[in-house]
Amino acid sequence: MRHSRALIGAGAAAAVATWWFTDSAPYPYSQRWLLDLPLPFLTLKRLDHVLQAREGERILEIGPGTGLQSLHVAPRLGPNGQLDIVDIQQEMLDHVGRRAKEQGVDNIVPNCADAHELPFADGSFDAAYLVTALGEIPDPARTLAELRRTLKPFGRLVVGEFFDRHQIRPSSLISLAEGAGLRVARLYGPPFAYYAVLRPIDA
Image (cartoon, rainbow, N blue to C red):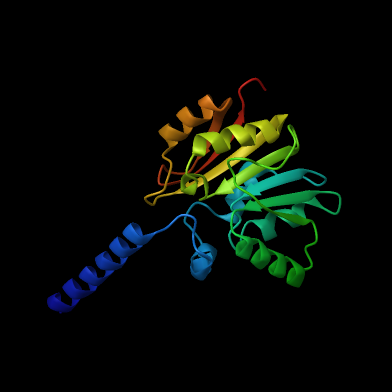
């Protein structure tokens, strides 16, 4: 019995180690199923609470993956609202588009672009969010600066981060945010799985 438990424990440890050291950024489309797995604390209900999406708003999502959050947020914006999604992988955007069509969601606008250079005018968005995406971007400081640029003066930014080797820890996020002209207004959840609400420093 002890021998069996030891083998199971060793197998689980090996699986975790494999996941940790082979985890790539961004997630390749072939591993898209991982993006639909629920993460503790980074629930859709908690995202609703921190993002506070309202009808008629224009919101931006960076790194939508397979659309887990996109397909939840977009309907909350109503027929006059819009969710722009940005991903560097066209396959991911096409995947979200297919799912949106199947579910009758028609206010998602895909943009294949680099998060370092967002293809939007200054002050375009009421809000923006990234869930387990900021830490996968090569230059998160530059992306935060771009998000600050494209937010309206009193806009809000939600960052969700989960513990893996790409995670940006809360203390690092606070420093990066300040350099981009943002401040962390609130933190929700434990350090290993948190949502942060950021606001422009001068708002």
